Length: 239
Ligand code: ATP
Image (cartoon, rainbow, N blue to C red; front, top):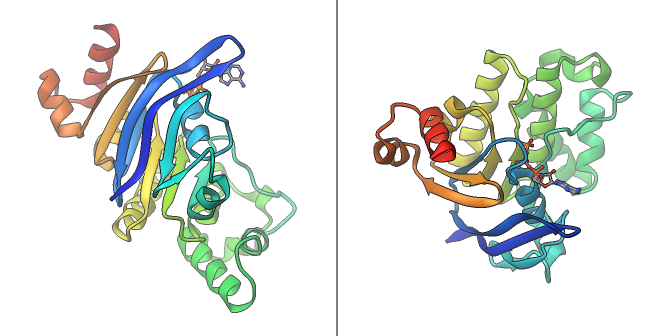
């Protein structure tokens, strides 16, 4: 089943078109990476999928639900983690997860969701420290736990490991792998070509609002005769 289908999706900001008719499909359980240079249109695309930005034309469906006509149905099955997401700094990590879980469930169901979040965040006893004492890596683990604990069918992650050290990036990639293995579809953006190569089943490259290439990392490297996805990226953009 297709978890996500974009058909000729366009987005204009005023008179300027930022996304010029993107079409793509993401299969259930797949990890799909969106890559592209700064300003290419990745976040705009992810925000349209997340129902946070109205599409100008075209259509997007998430597990068969249209983002424009059924946004509430879409919101029930997705989780979006923006690049610049933050948490309430005066709360402890545990209290933050409890607060966020209360939007989705109550009673024992909420408690189970919070326990799942605590396990995913894997912050040890620091889960009971205030969020404003967290390092960037700890904060990102808390946020990804918050995004995943309601068991979305589609997780939309914008530059989720940006600025993190090797160990935190590695562990977040492990979390992404494990949720995908559990059946969650993941659409993520990243500037880290090593990460995309290691993690993503398929990759779509956006350049100036257009999807200019798509495929598995292995196929793209073979097609371009390159050893790394970074070299494919440079060759595709420079021509
Ligand atoms: P980055 O990798 O730097 O995060 P991106 O690929 O996510 O970039 P977008 O943030 O989607 O790119 O931006 C695509 C284009 O749309 C850019 O030219 C940007 O300036 C423009 N844009 C984004 N948001 C707005 C907005 N709210 N109003 C006007 N233009 C916008």
